[in-house]
Length: 179
Image (cartoon, rainbow, N blue to C red; front, side, top):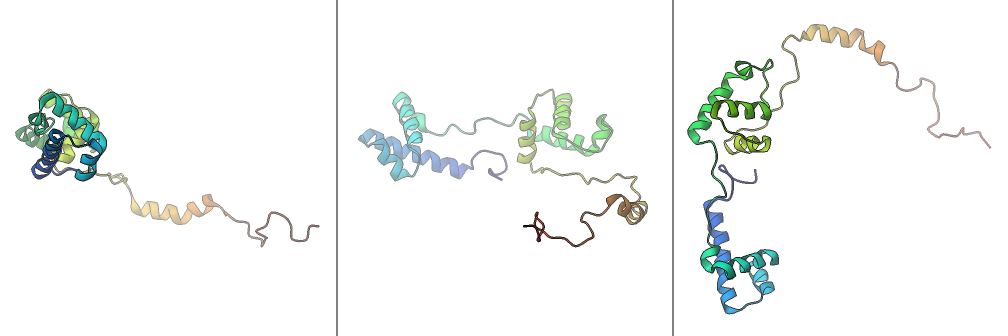
């Protein structure tokens, strides 16, 4: 996973990135070239250009970290309630089969908490809280393994047919004795 639980950067990584920006601000004040700052700090020139523009508008204070870009829309308490709802199963919420999809989870969030999420937002919410994508087992509950085994032995060989001709032949397209 790209980010730790909670999304975004860790606190240590945020401090490290902020330190880079503040080092760049000191270099801006000394009049260092953007390319040299980028090379010394091992960041892209475009990042340094963006930092310089921000520094020109608001000084070093503008380069400080502003915290996470957004807070989760569902609180931890609400997510715990969502997990309880998901544990009840899709049938309890009106779907016939026992399969949770992102669209269905989105619908449950909308009904229960009156919040709108995008499909990707639901995926990120679930991954952030430790859920993972599960592929359902593709077997019907009514499946009769004995009947399937009998069909494979008796019916399938007749239906399958032969893939190669039985007579020996050449792998070449032309006949070996053609002029």
